[in-house]
Amino acid sequence: MRILVTGGTGQLGRPVVERLRAAGEEVRVLSRQAGPDVVPGDLRTGRGIDSAVAGVDVVVHCATDFFGRETDFARTLVEAARWAGGPHLVYVSIVGVDRVPLGYYRAKLETEEFLAASGLPYTIQRATQFHALVRTLFAGAARLPVVPVPRVSFQPVDVRDVAGRLVDLALGDPAGRVPDFGGPEILAAAELAQAVVEASGRRRRIVPVSVPGEAFRAYTGGGHLAPDHLDGKITFAQYLAEQPDAGVLRCRKRHSAGT
Ligand SMILES: NC(=O)c1ccc[n+]([C@@H]2O[C@H](COP(=O)([O-])OP(=O)(O)OC[C@H]3O[C@@H](n4cnc5c(N)ncnc54)[C@H](OP(=O)(O)O)[C@@H]3O)[C@@H](O)[C@H]2O)c1
Image 1: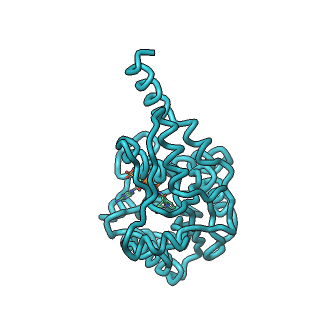
Image 2: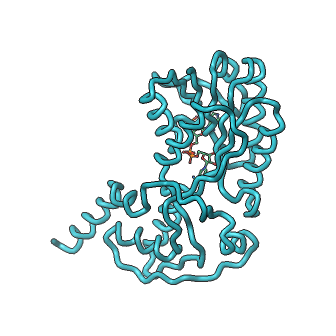
Image 3: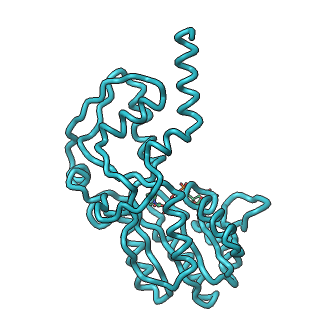
């Protein structure tokens, strides 16, 4: 099959591309940056999108825009896909886009609805928060002497696990919205923050705090979780153990302690 991966240079797109190539598929990677292994194109302006989509059987749409253009990206893609004879569109969304009132989530939900109404063959996979995002949430706070963390839980998932699912979907028939894909464990933010602090070789006091606001109420109620879908295999602890910069922080600490 000929497959276009938008966002194929991003954290999820990279393992999707690797896995598709390992499966022997012909893969095009869309990027705004010129490069030896990419098809140049910009979903914001439409530059290069028609030729990127021409002749493909499937588009795995991992490109994203955090600043309100998520649905415009999909519009550009769908327009090009119609001209190209209607390839299967596989879109990755987020668990709880219909429950957590955040602007980015609303844009993802609108994009899901737009794709479902487009008349093109499509599959939508929602996933829980990626390990890297959860780590970033707590890495900054871990520099403070006392780490305040919200009283919520997360179900972090590894992009390699999500990529494996997306590849199965891309190689299968269009399936509409499929069951959510979640990480292997649901852990309190305090436990996750503790793991991030420990991975950096520090010791900190973690203090759970309540956060006001509608979005946090939705998080507290588990709107972003998929407890019936503990699908991923790679745990947050395994992911942290693989992170080279966690090791660097540990070394720096040993160095500053004169050991
Ligand atoms: N992060 C999470 O916790 C999480 C959880 C569940 C689902 N998701 C979803 O997973 C998807 C991938 O997320 P990610 O974290 O892998 O994203 P990412 O690492 O931030 O990558 C974003 C990608 O979008 C591409 N892109 C941005 N603007 C573009 C434009 N104008 N035209 C063409 N390409 C453009 C970038 O390509 P170039 O820079 O090379 O152009 C890049 O490859 C998103 O839809 C996200 O909502 C994320």
